[in-house]
Structure formats: structure tokens, C-alpha cells
Image (cartoon, rainbow, N blue to C red; front, side):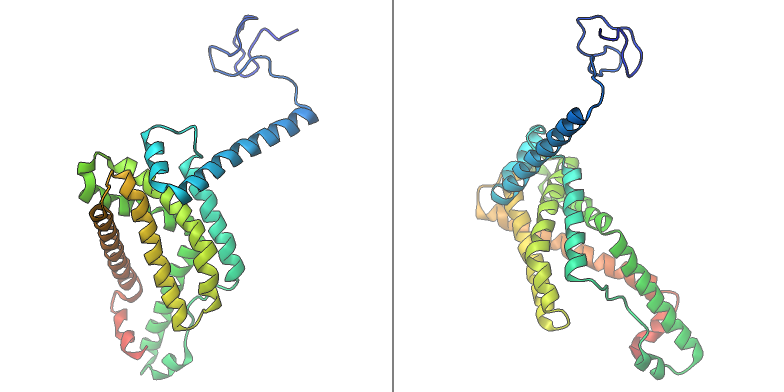
Length: 273
């Protein structure tokens, strides 16, 4: 016989009620068995897999349509963008740990120490190396946050230049997060292994730069449809704004890096590097 009360909140139920009117939990919750546990596990896996596959396929073939549909209200069809982003960044970290097992953190260079004129300068140089290591360590440990924080920054530029296209700042941010997640997967599979293969020479930097250009082209391709452009001029304008945002962000990061590492009079050691 069915328990007349809700197993979640204890509210009294009638036999005809399928859901608790107080807390919303389904009535008639059966006891957990091995069979029910296995069934629920596979239902969860296959439901999530279907959403991820739909999202991956859509972002690969029709990125503009996917982000337009999600922002437009088709949420059931696709996987949650923030969960998807977290999975993609986790995949990138996994690939990075495989192709780049040892992080190249900055170390104290003996030849620089020998060039420095006194102990004060040597201590200053050691301080800059430690601060540089702290920054690289933070970025390495917080790769998901470092990647995610770019979305609102780029979205701000896109909103400033294309707000007349009828999209608000939050919608542009979500669209950019979806594109960033898929671009992260592509970068991990295509660019990262080649970058590791040629690590230590000029080719690695060329590959890295080419990867950034290809990423921006992918973003522009998806955002062109998202903003409702049908001409090459719209695609070009989006690409230029993305490059402007990227260059601006790079300059700001470089400024923050310089102040943190070489601020407070520590810049005197630069001439000896």
C-alpha cells in the first residue's frame, strides 16, 4: 500500500496525486534496488550523452544556429552550456597533462645572476622570478577560470559594436561560452599536440599563432549567424572586433603582468635579462 505522505517533505497526499503539491517530488518512490540503480545510471548517462552529442554536432556544423536556438529558448534540445564548458576545459587539461607532462615554470638563470652588480639587484631579480612563477602557477591551476573569464570580456566588445542587432550582453556572453567550449576541444585535439611536437623552436610559436587565428575565424562564423548577418561584410566586421578585443586584452594582461612582476622598482633588472 502506498504511503499517504510525501517521502520528501511529509505532506499528506491523496491516492490520485502523482506529485507532491508542496515540494513537487514524484509520489510512489520505490525502494532502491540493484535493478533500479542500474536503470537510473544508464538513463542518466544516455540522456547526458544525447545532449552532448547534439551540442557537439551542432557546434561543429552549424554553430550560429545552435547558439541562436539556445539563446532563443530551445534549452531542452541542448546540454547546459556551463556544464558543457566545464567538461571541455577538463578535456583540455587532460590532453595538456598528456602532451605536456612537465610545466615549464621560470627558474633562476645563473648567467643573469652573474651579470648583476650587487646583492640587492640579485635579490630583486630572484623576487621577479618568484612572482613570474606565481602567475604561471595560478593560470595553470585555474585554467577553467582563466578560460571562462575571457567570455564576458569579449562579449562586452561584441555588445558595444553590435548591440543594434537585438542581442543583450548576457545572451552574447552565453553564446560566446558555447563557442569557447567547442573551440577548446578543437584546440586540444588539433593544435596542442603539434605545439608540443615542435616545442622549443619558432615553429611552435607559429602553430600557436595559427591556432588563435583559426579560433577567431570559427567564432566569427558562428557569431555571423547569431547576429543575423548574411554578407561577408558582417563576417569581416565581427572578425575585426574579435581581433580588437584580443589585442586589447593582451595589452591589459601585459600591463598587469609588468606591474606585478616588475613594479616597485624591480624593473631595473630588465636590462640584465
